[in-house]
Amino acid sequence: MPSKVCFASIDVEQDLGSGFRGVESLDKILNIFKKYNIPATLFVTGEVLQKYPEKFQELALSYEIASHGFTHQFWNTLSPEERAKELDNFISLYRSVFKKSPVGFRAPSHVIDEEATDLLAQKGFLYDSSVVPHYPPFKKYRGYKGKAPLLPFRFKGTNLLEIPVRGQLWGIPLAGAWIRRLPVWFYRILFFFHQPEFITLNMHSWDILDKRFIGKLEKIIGILKKEKYQFKNAEQF
Image 1: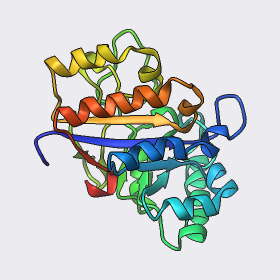
Image 2: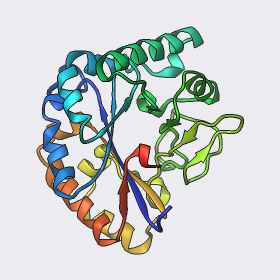
Image 3: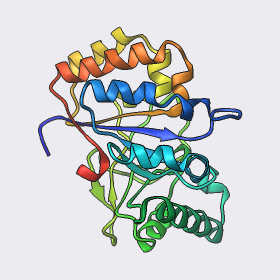
Image 4: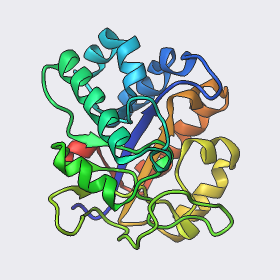
């Protein structure tokens, strides 16, 4: 892996509450990625893919399209059979749209466990990107409870690659909700003192509904470019 790498991704799902305004405005984010030549992975729910198949067929020419579940239900609320059905429904839809099988997955709200990663491997997925290996101590994390490395790793007993969702110092995420709420100068200070070997830049499609987001996102990308980060999508790992 190069000395400093950033994995960029968007979770594409129904807006908080209801509606698909974020999905319909997704190009506003992707235009920024295109401007700075940033490859990215779009983790798309089956509900979105079912509603906008032509849109994502076109986007697949430039971006990797991966799974974000079918219905965006949190996996800690689902039985093993319900989890398998979620994946089977998504895989069937994905094949009908793209004429190939999906290889990547991110669990809704990063809620995943070892049984889920085993299931992903059984269903033919090559990587997952759900685990948050460190999290701000003042925030409650509902996701993976095991100890995980800060760099991409393989789960024991499987060939499934985990691309962890890694933040900055103290686990401060480089994520949409945090970018919207924190001043850009705060991230400048973090990167002045610490440039992780691997970091993720992740967001939701509905982050675009905050009018401040695009301007702040572009400045964050500027910080990463200044610090000589190389951007990759998940398949490039």
